[in-house]
Each structure stands twice: as C-alpha cells, then as structure tokens.
View: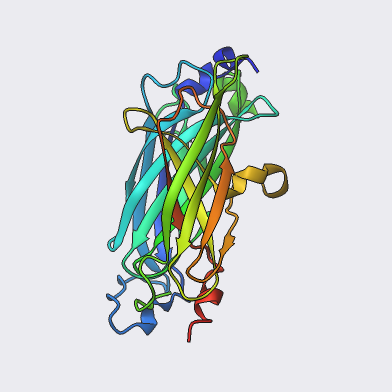
Length: 170
Length: 125
C-alpha cells in the first residue's frame, strides 16, 4: 500500500467523539450505603456526562504508520481519566484506515456501561455539518469500585486515497 | 462490584516489555509486547490489558489490547481476558495491529477487568 499518497485525504481528518457515560439500571452502586448519591435524571439510568474531542496532531502525519490524533476527555464526577488516545491506523489487507480510540478510566464507585455519540469531520467539511455521525453505541465497560476500566474502541473504517466527495458518495 | 473490601487494586502490572522490528521495505516499525500481571485477589480471576506505546517525548503513538495478538479469531474491537491464578501471575501478550512511524521508547500496560469479572468475585467467601 502506498501509504504516503493514499493517506493524504485522511491526514487532515478530524473527529469529535462526544460520549455520555451512564450507570446502568442494574448497577450495584445502590447496594452500598457508603456510595455517593446518583445524579438526578428523568430516567432510571443515571446520566454521567462524558465528552471526548479529538483533533489531528500536527507534525505526525508525514510517514506511513498510524496517525496519532489528539483527544480530550472530560470524565463524569467520580471517574478519572488515567490515559487516553486516538489514532488512524492503516488496515493491513485493504486500502482502509481504521479510527481507534483507547481510554483508561478509574472510578470511585462501580460503573457498568457507557453510551456514546460521536461525530467525524473531514477537513474541508463545514464544521457544523459533520461527515459522519453515530449515536448511542453501547460501550461496555465494567469498573468495580476503586478499580480501573479500559476500552479499545474501533470506531470506523475509511477508504484511503479518495477525496472527500468520493467518500461522501459511498 | 461496589465492594471495597477486596484487594485494591485487583491486579498489578509487574512488567511490560516490547520488541520493535523495523521493516526495511517501508521503514515502519512492527511492534510486539508482553506484560506480567499479578492477581492480588484470593481467587482465580480473569484480566485484560491495554498496552500504550510512547515515543521519546512521552506522547502516545499507539495502543492495543491483549486480543490483538490473534486478530483473525477475535478481531480487534474487544478484549481477551486471560486467567490468573489466585495471588499468582500471568503473562499478557499482544501484537500491535498496525505499524508505527517511530520506534516506541516506552510501553505501559494497564490491567483491567471486563464485564464478566463479577463471577470470580462471587467466589470470595
């Protein structure tokens, strides 16, 4: 794969991942009298807002390997971000790049699931009109109280060597 | 899951090593890694691992899970829990499923539990 030429349209790719973390209804946190109270919500699912935003990292896109993407994560109360990263990685067997995100979280109380919405922009797309939007995927992530949870998230595959117009027409 | 009397942390990463081989055809680095995890619980347990690779400046340049050592069987979007004996150690291997532009200078292994882990905790009496 001629990654130098094929990846150019992807070098300037931008994605914003907006995630809303939530404790599921069967979370065991309510069984612990010492557990902090859940935030008030209209549903039995306690919403814990989490935001992730990612932008290209300048100076890291001129070679042929994975392309690191800067990612910012805002964790809900009681959850700490231990490590986070996002990147576009070349696919071994096709003219594709795969967008991955990796997060490591620690939580003061048990948490059993996250749901996330995210948006992806190509560089020449007007920023209020994302190239791709996906909503409410369930990211299963179990974090016992005071422990660490992590996910290696495969978000999407993108053809390499194509213009934005070609990508949009697929 | 919310019991705070269990060992904290459940698991401790005791080592993490990597081997980066430069592909002469394209100059990119193919990376393999392995780490050892100690189970601090008094029961057999299962642990997964997320490996982060850093350049000399401390920037993350790659990451993957233990499952990516066998992509054809499992794909690369989940995790592969590995059993660890009570208060014992296990080795977590991985292969980075994509090449890197630069040779990684450091690897860090973050052990973590998955959603099926509670069955092991239930064995603690």
